[in-house]
Amino acid sequence: MKITVLGGGGFRVPMLYAALLGRASRLGLDEIILYDVSAERLARIADVLRGQAQEADGALPFRCTTRLHEALEGADFVFCAIRVGELESRVIDERVPLADGVVGQETTGPGGICFALRTVPVMVELAEAVARHAPRAWFVNFTNPAGLVTEAIQDILGRRVVGICDSPTALCRRVARALGRPPESLWFDYFGLNHLGWLRSVRDGERDLLPDLLADTERLESFEEGRLFGADWLRSLGMIPNEYLYFYYHAADTVAAARSSLQSRGEFLLEQQQAFYTADGRGSEAALRAWHATRREREARYMEEARSAAGLGGRDDDEIDAGGYEGEAIAVVEAIAHNQGRVLILNTANSSSLPFLDADAVVEVPCIAGRTGIVPTAVGQVPPHARALIETIKDIERTTIDAALSRSRDRAVRAIALHPLVLSVNVARRILDAYVAEHSQLRHTLR
Image (cartoon, rainbow, N blue to C red):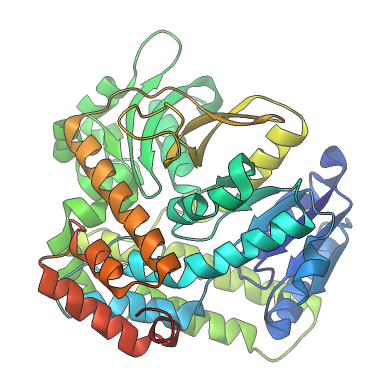
């Protein structure tokens, strides 16, 4: 088996490599190919990977290349985690909306729309290259906004593209721990879009355990989402939202916290990763030590803007060390390679899972993953307020894709203006004008 990683110089690639090290023989994995447009970033990450192999006393061959066709040829799985515009663009995405009192976040609101406007055209080109050079490969997408991007390349790669995110699984894991049950013994009735989902019930084969958890404030507030949203609001909803819904339910609080903060999430990551990638003292051991220290600091400050708005402190150590998207990626590979028929929460075409959306709409729901594909389970009807928000955001996602591919400024304004977090059409126009002024990619594409 050959796995290609697009964005192979990315900071989180060592997490993926470490997970694959322990499973290489079981998967029949022969080689990993790391592709990136930056040879310097690839070299730094390659040092980390060599350190991991030495530390594990194992070997999993990998090669680095800046030649796309070479990376793709013969691949069985293509993992894609790229950032068009790098972290400098993320800083702009987050900062611009705050000037108009609008949430500035990487994937939510105008920031997510602008990120997608830059990213979709590049992802379409990559998908076309995969279709030419690795037509039988499964395309596993981590690139944000994950659900929107997955939908944008479906027409090219069909049902062999799947989007992954570790946020729903992390929520389910935390809920299982609060219930004192192993996650694998429970069915999690989760539904929505990427970064816009809700956990509606948790079943053990006999009954729904969620009502008892919602009634128990101490247990409910023992984990991240319970503390973030508060027991009273969760009981009002009768569900547990994905942490990213904090930006909708507490938009004004998030804006106030972001404006008072000395540093945005993007600014923190930019400063941190510049230090990591340009550090002196090359060599595998030094690189691995630096990577571990940088990663721990990075994970400790995940979702810091929402936690700050909610008045919460730092993350628990077990959450910092829990890992993330690499576990979801390996689970997909194992399920397909070994035809496990495993239940995973994934981003895939709706079919009839959420009956109020059309069959091609990419949704984030429990799926059965096996060799023949990714099959979403039937979720059925959902509470009205969740349905309304899902339908609105899905329309915005599709308008954004259309704007990116047609290079239409008018459609980009429409996508931003119709977003629930944006206050008016004039605000949307100002936000887009500011993005165009600061993003060279948008200046040369939107018209």
